[in-house]
Image 1 (cartoon, rainbow, N blue to C red):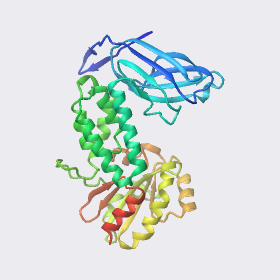
Image 2 (cartoon, one colour):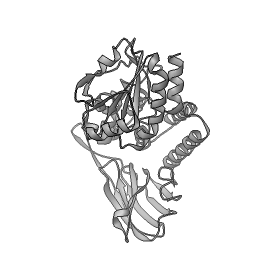
Image 3 (tube, one colour):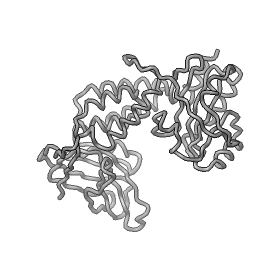
Image 4 (tube, rainbow, N blue to C red):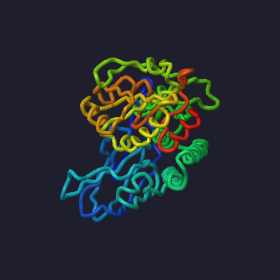
Length: 359
């Protein structure tokens, strides 16, 4: 049995989170978790510190926590006896009082395979509903329905831990201005966690470069930067936006090794072929670590738009300026006003938006 608590440094004062004196059990029966080995309970908000560990056998295991002194977001990671290096984390959920049930498939239900407590039930239902939206509606309809669902969830009675988990989970799909408002609702105990402070920094940058949100007076003008092109010459975003031939510039953040980025390449090729003569320019900003990797991929796929690559991975200046959290990502700039009017355009939505703008 284990007692889990945490000390949080807030404004120079060490504060002990309120003790609930409530227990938690975590009972697992997971399909695909074969053989025997260890399951580790890790705190994802505390540098993945191991909180507890138990043995598993053919998918079955059980944790018992006498008292949860701090509700946090955790993961379960398995390590098989036979091949220890083959283990990985397979569930992420809130550590809160209750009799938690971990079931479903080993990896398929990674985000929705835990029930048995109010907030975990809510998070599981949200993920299942969002998955249904994604399967049954176009990407455009999915975005509308997913945002509407989150509006309802954020207006409900959430614990601080659950609110922070949703903020973290929604960083690339829900307006950053609105996520920052949710951040302000957190108690100091959660607001001053390192993960929360880092999220705030990312969201503040991202909010400046996302399309305007109703009720916000923030105007998202593009932020200039200069990077080297594939020939090693410096090129600024400003020079591309101010080119009289361009009406709209799509700044595409990507890497040659990123699977989802590669999946979007056919859409980008089609968009460029359809609209380059109507005023569209694409500025590809690579997060590769080797400029030659970028060059080889660009040449092999015939990507004829402008490409920048500093060979610094995620440590490039635009990553911070545009609040990037993952890739692929993009922003669409209206060259006449300098305002970012769309973000994260993908698939058919990209072609539909450009068709409406560049008739």
